[in-house]
Length: 363
Image (cartoon, rainbow, N blue to C red; front, side, top):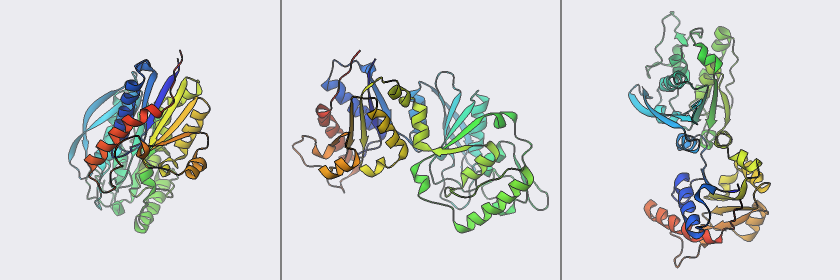
């Protein structure tokens, strides 16, 4: 049966989930004959906020509230997500447990969450990655998973303690990792924000030193290029074999929407986005190209207006609409308006833009 897919990035002060939900309600009000089960809502996340909620909700999975160690060593309670009924894929938003802008901090809590996920029967773990995180290069997470770190005198270091300096590490013993760690698959879903910052020159020098110790003591080569500011990928790739992926591509793959499009089950595809620059993601471009090959009608709705030349240059085969041009007896709110005002304006415009969509569903 053909479906209508309503995908959304955050737009006009709304989260991706809020925007997709509001446009869905407007579509149902405009076309009441369309069965509700034919409309698929797809809030898009890229490893940042909302990733765990999206993947658990889309797959009819489950949540588990667990206690873990925060970046400053404090106990925190965070959600652990499991996709689907079998729960074989676990989802962790690392920023929920170890977000920090301080010079020192520990990622021990990430390792605790990984261990909890595997204890619950997960075979794969998706690690949502959004900066800023504790800057211990992910070695705190490795310590929680059985890796031991020693100083020059042979004393074991407690990397659960956020004050322990990485410069004290002189030797590493990774033999204590459990079999589940070595036999499971780990994916780091890097959000776009992680690409905006990088480690300081001093931090990179320290990571180069640690990479040599890892190579010497564990026999694993670790790259120190293309790291985020926290460098958390360093420890997770070295000791968990984690694969670093574009967050948007990984999340889109996990939602299963590509399968719907490839199967030709999509009659119409609608994407909401704040402005054209947010569509620079290769993953979003690939999703649109897939939709163009499957759906009869593909529409992108931007918050801001676009000129005709801009529309033609960006997506010549896609219908482009603007919330700013929705049929209201009011001009768009000013850019410096309060967030509540912007949100209310966006909600109203999402309602008014619905009649301009080209939608049809066949059995």
